[in-house]
Image 1 (tube, rainbow, N blue to C red):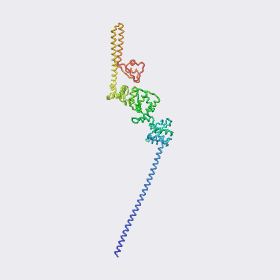
Image 2 (tube, rainbow, N blue to C red; image 1 turned 90 degrees about the horizontal axis):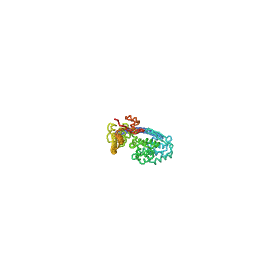
Image 3 (spheres, one colour; image 1 turned 90 degrees about the vertical axis):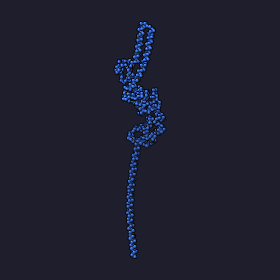
Image 4 (tube, rainbow, N blue to C red; image 1 turned 180 degrees about the vertical axis):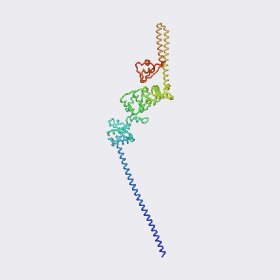
Amino acid sequence: MVLRHKYLGDGDMHLQTLGDETQKRLRFLTQLLIFSGSLNITFAIIFLYFTFSERRLVDQGLLSMQRKAAQSQTEKLSNTGYLSSIYDLSFRELLVLLANKEPVEEGFLKRDLALGVLYTLHYFNLEKALFGQSLQKREYFFTDKKGVRRPLALFAALKDAQFEAILHYGCSEKWPFTSEGLFHLMKKMEKPCDVSLEKAFLVTDEFYLISSLFQYQSDLRLSTRELLDLICRCSWPFLKTFTSEQKKLSEISRERRTFFLIGCLETGSAKAAEYLVQTDREYLLKKASDLQLLKLLGLASPSERISALALELLKSQRSDGVWQLSAAHLYTWAKEKPPAPFSRETALKRFALPEILHKTAAGASLASSSLSSSKVFSAKTEIQAKTLKPDAQGKKAFSKKQNSQSSAVLTAKSRFFKPYRAHIVQKGESLWKIARKYKVSVAEIEKLNRLGQKKLKIGQELRLPPVKK
């Protein structure tokens, strides 16, 4: 009985121990559940906070985007904003915009602004597209994306039928451009140029007016290709100004042709320099400025003609730069190295003196031939004198005749062998000034050159008496 009681007491104690452990576990689980619930609530709060915050940010972003879109739409509906957006479009892209009738500002539609860009930037031939209809042209200025103020030509009150004609012309013609547009295309296009483009330029007023200058002058005939190449070397402002003057003057002369070639020369055309040397040498020597001559000598290739011109310029009273370039051409043509430093006197001794000696030798040969003929003539007279046997009076007459003939021979001989000097008449010079300079009389100059009542001309060569020893 005692043992059983002892055993039961131990069981109760064991049961009591198990109950304490269960309570501890339940308490731990309860605390764990409480912590987990708190954690979940915390996460839920954080989630809700970020969710509402993000939605607010999204709403703000959408609102900002809507404002920007509205602002952009407002800018596109202004003339400046729309022109800035289409100013860099190609020709074909602008043609498509000619069908857009959406209004912009100041009574203009989007198609009006697109046409203005086509006309101003792409040289669209609007007058030809509308067959010379009267247009209300307006000058407009706008500021592009880079802040540059640009001019634009706009046309007001154009009708739907006119835009249809413009679209038809722009889509059907291969080169629907003005003369200026065709000119710029030919300059940009690589050689050989498109034949159809050249044919389009051949029917312009500019080409007709310039070709007429060369068509009626026999000393310089250029082919169509050569004339096109020459025109393409010009600048459009010069070409436009020249043809406008030509329309008013209606003058076809060598002077107008020379003026055109000078304009081409000033824009850097080597062909113009070649044509000027070939046909207008007198103009270059007397009327061309030093700057024009420097341009010409810098562009021209060495040749016999340019060397002859260079020698005359070296002998003239031109600037040092003209002298130096002229001498360089002469040395290049002679295949010699120019001496350094440059000396005009050295160059004249090298190139001008041989020319003078050559002319002197030619004159001497002519004089010797005339002298030999005079000797034959005198021998014949002697034979006649012996055979005729004249009387006393006849002797006197014959001696007088013989003396006059011999004096004529001496006069001819002195005419060929006297070392006459030469002088080129300069601007502002007179016979009195020239006579005083060379210490001779005016009568001598008039007699040697048979001037009479003739006036002196600039560039005229005068013969002067030899230096008295």
